[in-house]
Length: 218
Image (cartoon, one colour):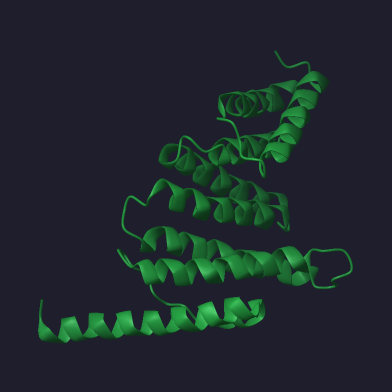
């Protein structure tokens, strides 16, 4: 490696370490807004500090977006941008670490990433945007199932995306039954969920079954 390149890599690593130290301090102080406002430009790969920095920022943006939608917050208009911030930084965190990521790390990042994708889809301004965002959710859920097949996360969010695809389709059995069958299949194939995901998975299972009955799906 050329000396100039070695120096550039070293300086970038030092910058990432400084960013991470600051983000950790802000996180310890609970200053989510300052974290969201902090520029994090690292990309990895094979950079554990970059993964941590991106994850801290993603988590902050996700929490801020969720808070913006809380009743009485009067900040709902800010939520899409905050979820976009979370999505971008979870995606960067997934790419920043050594590949393949340890299953526990991959599942932890996926939990935030998939939630951010779903919340951003639910803030879509029109059907075309909702369809595109739902497709992104389905794709990431599929990647999660492949990367961590022992986790119910990818199955839950894949089923949620299929259920939403049915809801976005024409109101007929021909249009809705196939994605509802896909959703039911993913729920049936899901490994046992953890305690945090179990209620959502059960509620989704009931919603899918109700829609299949409504349209007399086979």
